[in-house]
Length: 153
Image (cartoon, rainbow, N blue to C red; front, side):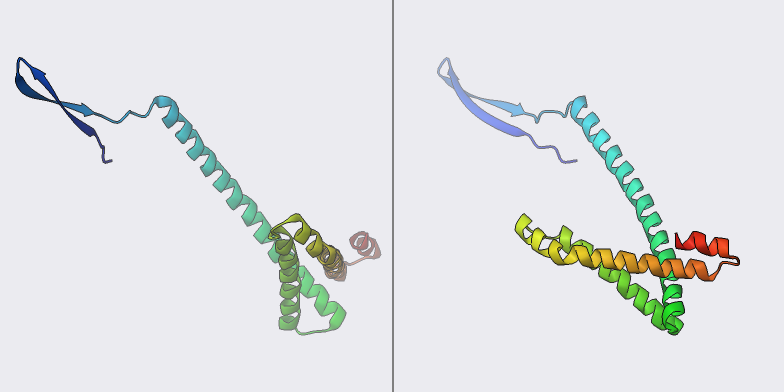
């Protein structure tokens, strides 16, 4: 750490002899209160970072699981190949994410309302279709009518 100090030269006359006095001013030391506050802030940032990593991991896992079920449901409904179903499910999920981000990135309330006018119905449709495809994927793996009814509720 580089410490800086200020040097002040002053002259005074004493008995007709000029004398120079050197006064060195040192910077104020940080108090324990400030360092305590910065330590708390760093701990809080680390804690928030850890929580964000945990939440992101759960979100990524659930998204991967949802993509798998959505692709399987698309295959059941459309009879498409596996790669086509995966491409469609990725497109659907990316469309959903893009719609949500468009609402978050709006610069003002007027623009946000204009975007929401079209984004909200699209989000509702996307979530409904995705839930239906997930239900088809779950129902396709059941072995009796009771389990099939449970997946479609």
